[in-house]
Length: 208
Image 1 (tube, rainbow, N blue to C red):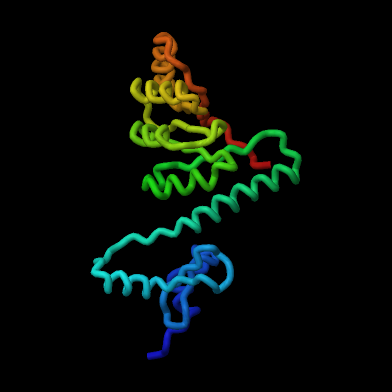
Image 2 (cartoon, rainbow, N blue to C red):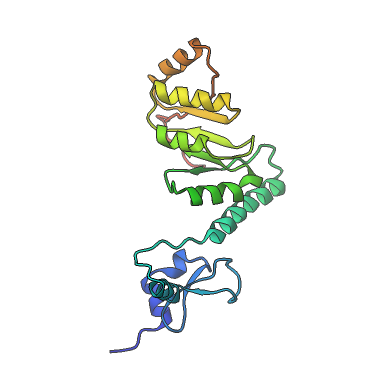
């Protein structure tokens, strides 16, 4: 049987497509991580890490986190938009949001928000539990808290709490019946969050 090359392994698992200079395969055929995305220094052999964990009596499966990758990706994304805004003289502002449904683990969320604080990174919530989690995070004053998903009166009440906290909350109205809850909130005298609208056009654009 022919010996499998490193290139074969990289192609088989598509590491070149998703690794982005952070993940690779070494000469032993082991997965490696370069958390800073730089040169060959600081390369971590994942197999050796697992073996060391076993020697310490830690059973697999286990979760390995690399917060440095999150930090670098958020910084790179923020810099790309900042440079584009300066290059093209855009007069608006860039306020990114992290959809918390993607990953709700506290270490991940906190790493992303702290890394994106300079860019006023906010959170997009799609349910009441996600909104509660979002309101419990520390963000900049300008950062957005976008409220999507199914909304009932409790959802609007939570959004009102966020507005009372001084958060930049935007409730996205998707269905006509949601306006009823908005009016009820207004009649109650509670703080009103900002309102956005999601509109589905009947006519299709040409793309030109």
